[in-house]
Length: 88
Image (cartoon, rainbow, N blue to C red; front, side):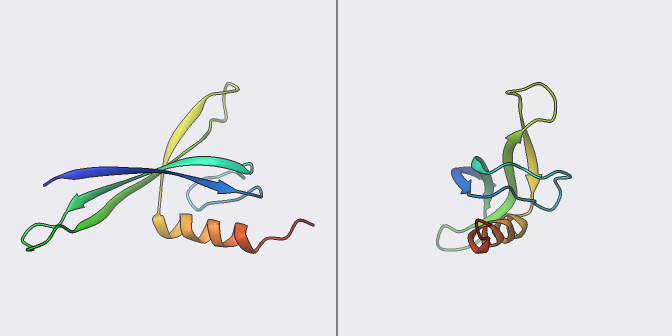
């Protein structure tokens, strides 16, 4: 089974919450890594998502970062909430 990783940057315009992270994260750009594995037995190349991780500022020393495992649906929900938020 072959695993591939995709990296993308997602930007939040407002502070946000994401399920599985116990704190509010500040607005900004975040690296997201998605691991996918091949689906065997098909006549064409296809992949299924097996992990989604986001790099966030750590709670400890300033400038430290940590990579947290999150759900892809939770990420999509956080992005949708950010897009619909107003600048009050």
